Length: 182
Image (cartoon, rainbow, N blue to C red; front, side, top):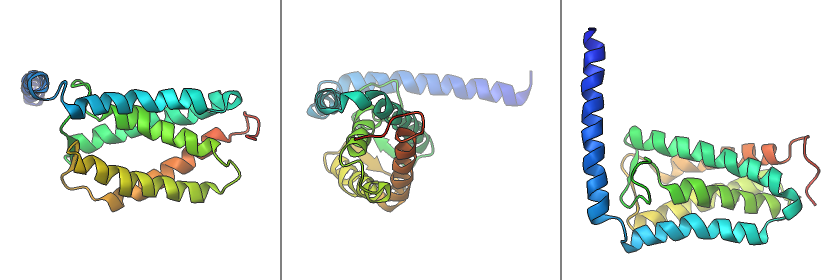
């Protein structure tokens, strides 16, 4: 057998063993802590608010943009963890290498609310607001409550990424296949 393939199999075995150990630590030290409960709340409450406050006739277009943000933020978050840029101390679900409340709830719901509120305001202004709030308010807050720990990452790196992602979500939401938001 190829030595490279053998080494890959060894690494996979090590990753599997570390995953088992990580899940055990999660059960012993994370689940049912106040940070874990906060994560559960942050994963559920924004969606409840969105269901109550959304523009019902625009649900599909908003969800399309929200799911785009969910997919991209989950992928980027996982990539950042794998590259050693940051880590999370209190994951809601131990099997997913990202912070579920942030990627699957807070980012997409905040995006959808910005998209529907004052739809005539410039997408660039809203993108700046989105980038500022997520990079310079939310990220420091999660550091303060010891959920998120940047290792080599700086908040300033996040701002342009969030700004660009918001502009793409805005473009998706206002695509020609939808009626104009009122």
